Image 1 (cartoon, rainbow, N blue to C red):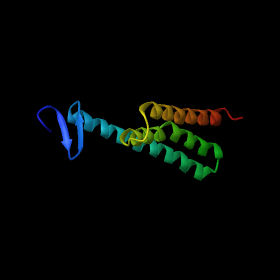
Image 2: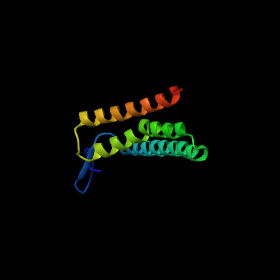
Image 3: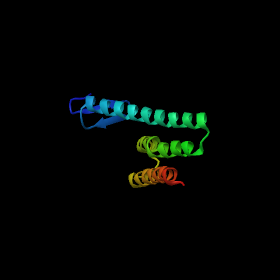
Image 4: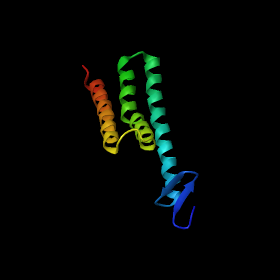
Length: 109
């Protein structure tokens, strides 16, 4: 940490808020991601136990609503592979697909 609030490591530099807040945000992101994957895993286990197809679609929808957008934000935000607008659009489309999947499961006669 330099005197002007810039954290530098090799060729990577970060400016902005305190290190503690940044580490807490990264920790909370990781916990949220693990919880999203765990809940999805339990839905898949429920499908494997019962063999009911709606449970599998519920797992897919929940994954698209929770974990997939987090993965896209993390990867696309850290790798310079797309613009911010394209990333936001992709995340919104993934979440929409997740919502539609869950709605189809809930309202399927």
